[in-house]
Image 1 (tube, helix red, strand yellow):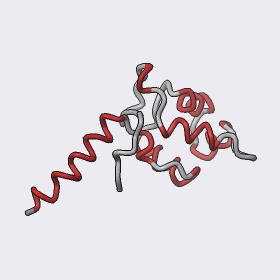
Image 2: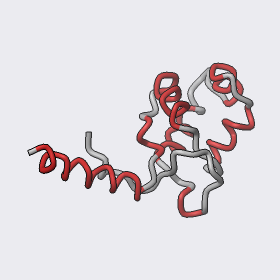
Image 3: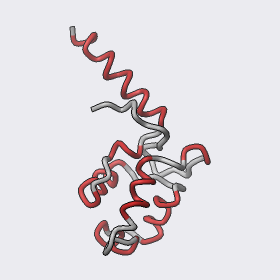
Image 4: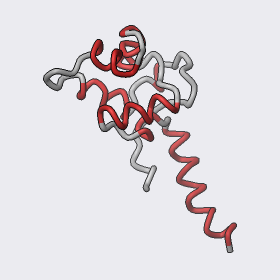
Length: 105
């Protein structure tokens, strides 16, 4: 899996994000998914046993879902869990993918 396609993204904890971290591929994909017929914040929240305000926070980019909830969103809406990574996180994962074969040798 290639992680170097990221433009921007976010952190593993549901921390309050700074402005430059808010527009992630995960947030964009969530906004798009919420436009599908029959899918809205309330239905996603109900499916995940979360409050609608939680989904709203994710949609606005103020907070990112925790790691296990990213996996749940992948199963529920098809949003890859790694879409929520920050650019810095994605770059680190990519560097480690390049280093790993040398360490194993």
